[in-house]
Structure formats: structure tokens, C-alpha cells
Length: 251
Image 1 (cartoon, rainbow, N blue to C red):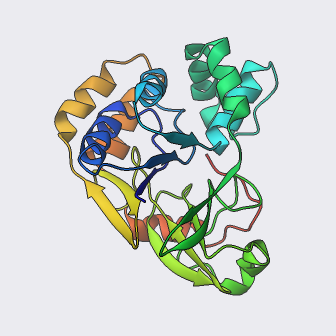
Image 2 (image 1 turned 90 degrees about the horizontal axis):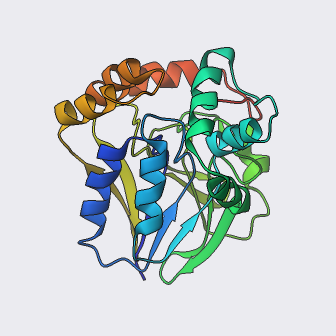
């Protein structure tokens, strides 16, 4: 049984295309899409590509889908002021059919893989899609969230940095981000078989930035420059997240 897990695409269609090209060579049994497909320059196109894939797939809901759903419902999304324009723009790109899709994506997904055991896939933590923690977060701060789950492994994303750590008696693996990885440019994801393999896909960043800059996304230039052609360093982001507490929201 082979499972590929991709997280935090954020409408970066060129990155997604490159990752899916790699995945197609793996003969996987299931693709888990771990949330935050949307809120980026080509969200609609990225979703369409995923939906058209002729392989078994399971979507789970991320904080950005939650924000876009709120906007589509005429409610004020719980996001910082600086990203509200992009949430409004993204919501306008998606159809009523997409709204129903997002609404029906579960927050978590349980799956068993022989050799690994019972695995819980979530976006941020098992309790919600907003919690922030990293490989450096003290265990005592997050242990209650990973207690009593009755699984061997939790796979998450949200913070855009891959890690593999143990919290209590649960192995917790962050798949990283396809569309906005922090650290090395490119695209990060994981493969689960009898082992968990961290994968990194390189793609043509210059061509990708040209495609992104040609979209009507409100922050297209910033996205292309700061998250595709370049990436925030892992050390920088670890410092930013250092004072985060479980329950604090992030987009």
C-alpha cells in the first residue's frame, strides 16, 4: 500500500504539476490532499487538476478552505486584515459546486498502512486546522492534543516545514508544503509505504513565477518573488512561530 500526502498547495499550479508528475511514477494506491489547496494565484486550476486525477484521493479541509467558505457564505472570515482581499478574490474564483466540495471535506482522515499502523491525517492538529507547532515546540505544550488518539502516526502540514518527531507515544510527521515551502525552494511532500519518505520536487522556478505574475491574483508579484523564486528561511520561520500557542490562528 503506497500513499502520497501533499499539503499546502496554495494555488501554486506549477509546483503541483511537478509533484504530480513525480507521484505518477510511483503507482500509488491513494493520494491524500491535506488542505489549503486554495488561497493562492491559481487555486481554481489547482483544484480542477486534482479533481481530474484518475487515482483514488482523499481531501481534508485546511484553514484556507474554512476562510474561503466563510467568505462564500457572506460571513467575515477569521483571518488577518492583510489577507482578506486575497480571501475575497479566491472565493470569487470558485463555484457553488466547489463550495459544496469544501464543505464536505472532513477535518481528519484515518487510514491503516501495513508496516506503519493506524495513521491520522489532519491539517494542523487533530483538534483543529489552525494550531501552530513546529519541531522545536516543547512537548509539554502540545502533548494533550496528541493523547488518546489510538493511532501510531499523525500526518500534518500547515506550518510549511517538514519534520519527524515523537509526541508522547505518537509519531508526528509534517509533510511540508507543495506551494509555499519554508526553507528550500521547490515543493515538499511525503510518501508512505512501509516507511515514511520525505520527498522534494524541483521545478522551473523562473517559468513558474512568470505564470503566477500573469494571473490576476491580488498578491501575485509578492507570491512569486517571496514564496516561489525565493522562500523564507526555516530559521526565520521557527523564530516567528516560537511564541505561537495552540489555538492561535495562521493563514
